[in-house]
Length: 401
Image 1: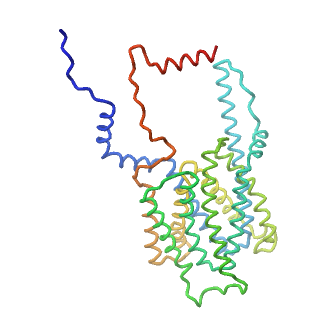
Image 2 (image 1 turned 180 degrees about the vertical axis):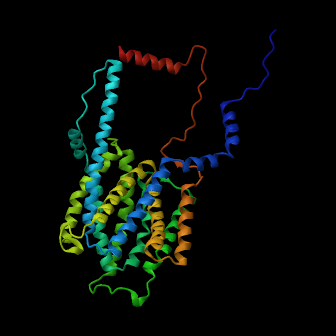
């Protein structure tokens, strides 16, 4: 009589529990290392450096060299650069797809549709650019609101209200993208907001005798309402852009979306140039130099990097990068151009850096309401095979016949 096997068997759930216990001590370390080595962090660091250099060179060109160019002309030139660069990247993508199609046809004797030309593809992208047109109009409205608010309230008050963009971005992320942030992340965002506010202390804490006189027709209520609407629109625009990039059914790549946004932004900035009347120089295209072109190219690179940071990260991480750039550009401004750097700014800068690290390396398990929480059903195979698989095979056979 054969002996019965008395060795206890272990279920998959037992093994998973053991594995989780063994990996518990190494998970945080692996998560931090993977975060540091990811493309997301690399893109965000480059975006932070680009924002810092853009701010520093713009301050040098207009604050030190006293160049009298229109900022809207610089923005328009940046959009033209983005259009050209995005079209070039789209062309490269089409060439790769064409080569892949030829390889698959040669190997499988399949008939494929002829590759779409760059002209036809760009026309198709333009015909589907209504969502980016909405975003371009929002950015245009935000520029108008900035002008209205700065005309009615001081730069210090404007800076204080502008820091609320961090919280409006997170709020719209929870509403539109159904994200859930841990208490650690919310604390980090609030600490970041107050850190940037303290870091901007030289702007809003100006002695009464040194403050510029406000215009006689200034209305603080109108200015406050304008800046608050801009803050809300800024948070909405960031999350709207992320939602279009990641969840749109067309699934256009990042270069196609950049092409759409730059093309739809072109007429908006052109209207601003006309309304500005040539800027400080008093004539269109006046006051430009080689440094102005570098500033325009850095601005275009910033737009491309923002889209990449949203693709590989999210709008909140993009906000963290641009906020960190405020600290970095101020330190460079102090070292290179002799800008202010008070003890309060140093303490606030450390607070900003700590808040960024607290948010980025938060180990709280994420909650996802979009994923079903129903436990998976464990199927035990019968002697005759899996009945569900047999039924699926029968359905496929009958549908083919």
